[in-house]
Image (spheres, one colour):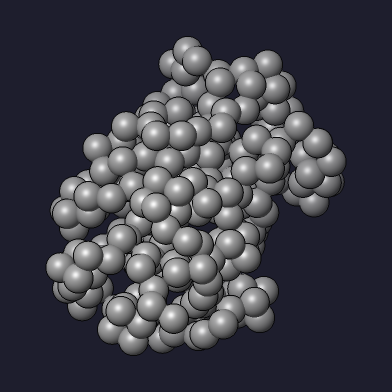
Amino acid sequence: MQYRGLLSDYDGTVSTVQNTISENVSHALRLLHRRGIHFGFCTGRAYSFLAPYIKDQGLDGAHVVCGGAQLVDSEGHILRETLIPADTMREVAHQILSMNGLLIVKKGDLYGNALAIQDAEHRVGLFIRPLDELRDWNIPAFFVGHLDDESWNTLEARTDIGLSKQRGRYEKQGFFADGVAPGVSKGSGARWWCEYHGLDPQTVIGIGDGENDVALFETVGLGIAVENAVPELKARADTIAPALDEDGVAWAIHRYF
């Protein structure tokens, strides 16, 4: 199979916890560009967070952000999106806040409650505005964490949102989830991306490390899990690449492109 595109997760796959991309991976991404291979991020992150890295790496194609809810170009212009209606999002936010959860709403900039703002102080490259500054509640995605089991069960019982729940990669992180409209996933975003670039999904490779990358693997022709991926994803992968700290994305690029 001659592969013509690569969709990659960001956190834990391309980027370290310090939000850095290794020189080996940067070199491999430049190699893709020279060979005319399409590359895009496929991530739960919002474009506003990724923008410095997209521009620094010269990634001029489209990217799947907000867990598949948006397809954007390299300048952040929205090409396609699916939004959670404002009334639904307000109700969900009220529910999360009443359960003392951490909430980040992704709407261009990031907006969050006090718990989210406090947490962001310890994270590189993350700036969160107060939730009361948000004016338009029709949003592509939100992030939720710091809930107990009963609260998670309550939130997961909702049918008007889709939750991609994951376990934190580090001790004591607990669970977190990205929330989107029903039917939205990295897989649906990957289909948009393929349509935009005129690619057959079977000629595209997906690489990732988290539970939400399963939908990506189900959509593309080849799924690659990095060695540090969660067991659920590794079980669904066609190939296992070296871990993030061993430049697994660079390995995949050199092997398949």
